[in-house]
Length: 355
Ligand code: SDX
Image (cartoon, rainbow, N blue to C red; front, side, top):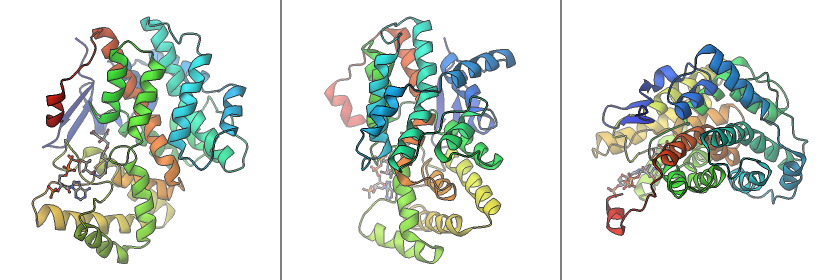
């Protein structure tokens, strides 16, 4: 029996992928974590080298993809373009209808490798620039920032991006993973299952919250405005993006790590502005909802990751797509698990009341 893909203790704030704690996983390369999620075990040095070489060798997208990106309506969010392009590239995959484990693994590698290239190319073309070809020598995180900006990131930024992808990679049966899993349970192909995940992740109650956090932090603008902003939202019964969780009733362990990374970036850039603004938001929400009302509404995975995007000049329009770059490995792991079961997921309507 393969080790559980994911373990969450929502009361203690514990998260593990394949029985390894998230605090250990963020010290590994994303390639090793995607291998762990999909294969069930951490790769040895040789296995990792071979797997990474396959991944990095599949990063390029063909000419037609760039042509289709150029035809996109650039007023749409990048996640909407990504949904379209992932569906489009499936026709070029010779293994599209090969449902063997080997065929599915080849598709998995192409999806993990090409999604960052598509996101970066769309962003540059939408901003009147030429796409930057991937650099196979760079890590997943460093290569994405390189393709996005056209220059190599600092070591800290590359590390932060890598950790972002790891922290976003997997989270049990969240809405987008469940959506992918249901699609795979019908034995539909892996590209279709990933497109299902992309469509579901987009929602602001789910992956779309990260973009809303970036916009919220920009709207608040400075630490002095933060407390009144939160009090005003709460007085209108509006939700504060990046807070609360269906499973965590304490600090989301990913949020804690993201907060540390945001502080590192702020200190490295000598600009505590956005970090301090976020801290006032956090302290106000905790005081008003947790301490005064006993509601377990803590920062989730999206709050401080949104702050990190401010420091890395990543606009809100890219936030959900970046979430997808990390999460695609988790979707694929669950799809492979479902392919093995060969059982369709078909809940009864009364079960929805429990969801
Ligand atoms: C992700 O499932 C996963 O694992 C998801 C995820 C993953 O890795 O895949 O962790 C990623 O989606 C994180 C969540 C990102 N979304 C947001 O940050 C949007 C803001 N958060 C909320 O929409 C909400 O907290 C949810 C959707 C995350 C959870 O919603 P629930 O469990 O259905 O809780 P609820 O909406 O029923 O709220 C319960 C109470 C309500 O108050 P009362 O009506 O009881 O008085 O808590 C309040 C809510 O108003 N509340 C909030 C709040 N979240 C809940 N109040 C203010 N701000 C918030 N953010």
